[in-house]
Length: 198
Image (cartoon, rainbow, N blue to C red; front, side):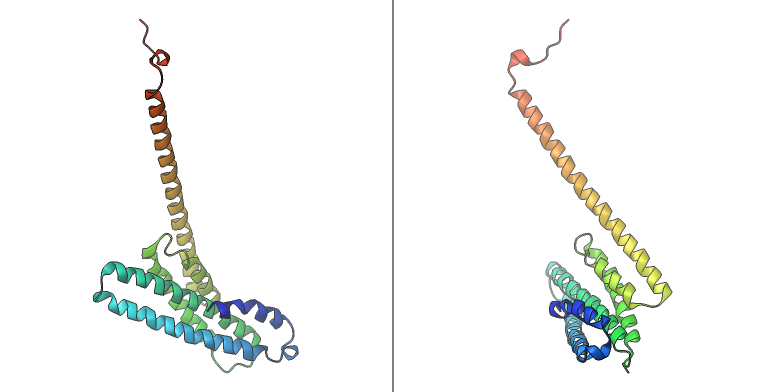
């Protein structure tokens, strides 16, 4: 998947030139697209198997495996959407319906991003990438509006979670400071301690 993703910038640079100047470009992108389709199909099967085995195994191990497989599959689908859009732009004679594939993948990404919400905040941080890819792959106004609202929700949830984490750290630091001060007061000589004068 990472190899396929790493080739996209080269496809875009070569795509800026006229197609006849880059004779093998469409074939390369098509091959890259097909390779990633196979990888995405395999990751989809792994995710489905993990969901199916959740009834027979321990909940903790299943949840961990599901989180890993869901993350890998979501990223695969997101990269596949990007490759789909690159291929759509450079292969104007394509007989395949790349737009329909992109819409289906975008819908799948929306579902995956919503399912990832249970692993928030860190476990679903990849969902932002997936939602951006879903927006790119969709031409439906309603679906894009939904993606935009979900992106805003994810941003707000993650910002709130990060703020809570920062506050916890600051509270811990404050408690340590108080403990250190109280410890230093107990070691202060008695002649330096404040006394009440009548």
